[in-house]
Length: 609
Image 1 (cartoon, rainbow, N blue to C red):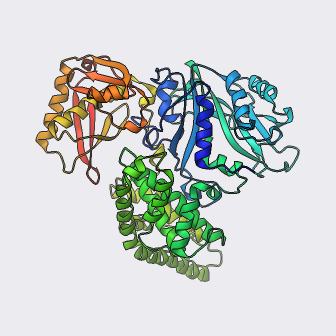
Image 2 (image 1 turned 120 degrees about the vertical axis):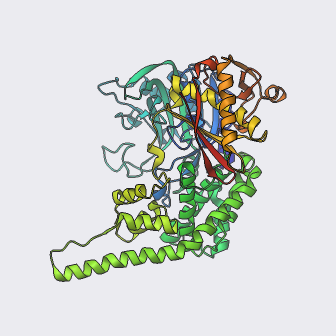
Image 3 (image 1 turned 90 degrees about the vertical axis):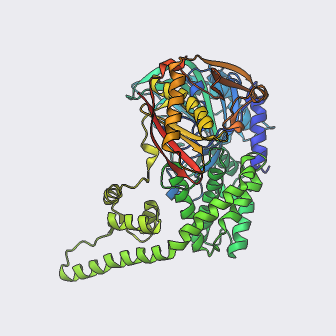
């Protein structure tokens, strides 16, 4: 059987679609630019939302890429055969160009072709949307699959929960999809289908036919164009194609596994507990490496993306202790991933020192209190057990307590740096739970800034191109230029987040801004607003943009042709938009807060009144 590596699959996929008129675009940052609906880029389509909604993409209507993604909803499940927090998504898009008639035959060709994945057609099954009260059954896709070569008995009509995709956030582009599965063994029963968890079917690819835009009130409107959005998870595909039982048994993790073995004297697969610890270390070190190496400068903190990063690093430390991983070893595991990915994601090599420094710093910080915290955790459980024993003797009908109090969980977080999710996971291992409501109450009482579970906290933002968010986005251009003029020409944007109410702008600066500097920045921005300067867009090559002095915030994400926005002689930036027509539409700019958001990083929150 042919062996597939991450490199060969990436090149094969991109080459297939390049031959069919697609432009290869680079991966965007892990931090969605000006999209407050989620903390991380969770799918390949996420950075392309404006173009799926109808905005013109500089590279054209046919695109393909390999997008780095992070999904954090399953952190506690990492350690099994298939869950990963970081993954690469192979994808291709039609922005109002081709639709089902082209995409389904191409999908079949890539899956079965001798020069491509070469999967026998009788080993493939597909699902299509089975219809409901709002939309009819997608018989068109089923007919196209059968015509391409899929057996009729291997085409399954499924409900909306199986064959509807999107949006990536709370609102945005979405539609019915068709999913492709490899048949790995005989069905467990006559009614067995790809939704069964018996292991007979394993998904390998997904074609989404986007025709709708979900609104904030839950309703759907027709998009101005019909789009195709596909997604093939690279890790999952490698696992299937190489006949492996786990995503961790592919070439991606090979060298990192050797590093962990050499450091611990343990072997991957020697027993269940050791294997789980290896997988947690592999996944979390890889994810932390990509977060720290990202062009938008994520660092561990108690809020938003930084909180998630801190949580996975500390979870890795805890599982490393289970297999005697020496202190300070996360950097060595990280180096194996930097070496593996450096040609595909050069930012990792560029930021290698920062990655190592932050990993060492966070690991040392947690290790210092870990032993004490574990003793406190044991003391807490022992106290509950003693109480249970005492009460059971007094009253045989007494129901033993099996929950750690919210204040105790908060104490473990506040004093020993245990994210509450780690406390909950340790408690679960011992048959206990955590009083999360009590924890949240204690949390609020102490006015903590932590945003545990914050992936659900945002209302919809710029992805909708609403007037308020478009204005605030334009204001970030003026703010960026003003900061350069007032604070330092070396100031660079390190991230932003926009809701309908306010903008949040992160930038590098080694010290806090003075009250005078904040006032100067405000005045400069308002001066440009009062001048009612036109916002001029033009498409030029990246090289031309550099030569003309445009600011490129995160150059690795740009293609050959870029959109540039000029605001008089005050601001020149490469950006995906959208923007207002002139600055006079912005209103009055007001800075509400200037604060630290990490080592050497500052954050401004501002509004337009």
